[in-house]
Amino acid sequence: MSELSELIRINKNIENQNKEIIRLLKIIAGQATYADASGYVYPDFSEENEEEEPSSDSFISLFDVVCEIGDVYFIDGDVYKYSVVNNEAKIDNLMGGDESCNFNIAETVSNESIKRNESLDDATVILTDSSKGNLPKTLELCHEQDAKKVFIPWDQMLELVGAPDTLQRLLKLNFYRNEEELINKLFK
Image (cartoon, rainbow, N blue to C red):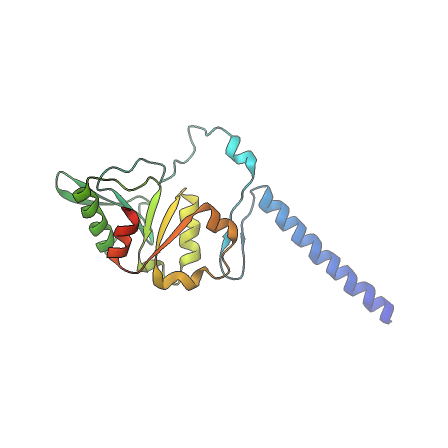
């Protein structure tokens, strides 16, 4: 009976390995994403997707635009664009959801951009305190929207423990303790 039990245990291990292989193959094929226990999603990095030409129906990334002076992209649950048009502040929710009431940092950065007559680097996004406790999903959103530089509040640094190295290679992560440090890093 012990040999039969051993065969059953080995068979279950093989079934589990096969399930894992199938899951990984689906990820490679772009049919699924994998989130580990920490909640970080491992993005698909297949080279085939980069060589395909986008169709006219494809979605244009929210960060795939040129930043003008005074434009600031920030995430407060959704992706927002803070801009100044004719000396009037304008906040657009680029995902079509609710309005943001946490735009003080974006306003400060926008004013500094206008004062210095410099725009932010393209594909730069600033995270607010709203991403606290939800940083993995927020960084996944940044990756999906083709952000390149992400500025994260300092107190959220511990949430990056267990983040995949590939995520940190794709997104240039910068941390700021206060608005002054953020301004210095953005306009160095």
